[in-house]
Image (cartoon, rainbow, N blue to C red; front, top):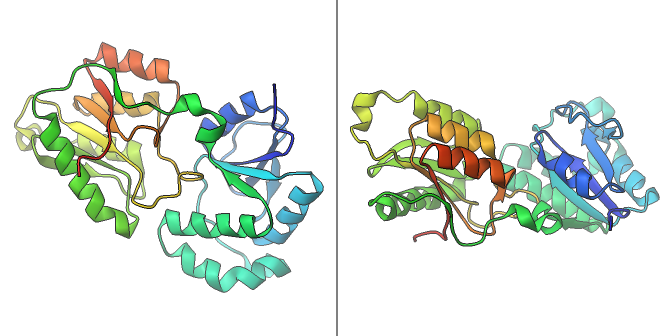
Length: 272
């Protein structure tokens, strides 16, 4: 039964917004002008400068719950277009724009909640997209514990700076750290690492986890078949994610790619 009549999906790029709409057909689809087209005809577009108008529209539409799904580019505000509400929060919003994604998204979520809307996570709507603890597929190599521990130590150090959610480790050495460019670009970078710098046949691992205190309602890490494909192409031997805290798109296809490349997928809590 579709229970999305009071739900609004604020959509960014990627497959997650469309997947939510597939199961919640009555949900209202919104996106912001300038965002990547999510190939849906019934999406309503709004301008970042007119958040007050957006809140009024949601109220008139009977929306009580809001889910943010997909990547949304950081806005560039045209001060000549600001409505009264957005102008009133602009000093605080401007300060958040120069900070990390978690700070910015938390501020925006707070504004929605002040207006009486419940912010819910995509994983609450589609719980089958997250992994329970344990191996999804494959068998790890002997030194996985050491590499996981090293990766988790690095992610713990980076987390307060809101830098990224992933790191690639091989034989105790750092191959790459996820930054603003995202997971796929990190894995492409790792693939370009000269062979003489790696000096091992172990393959290495990619560890993807939420940052400390990350609000998983609107900023849960996401992986999918392309992540697995690029990790295999980069010569890595496995993927480690936090159980119940990372969304996996098209899980069956991810397993197929992993199995075909002798690549393991493990959901395990942080080692530290």
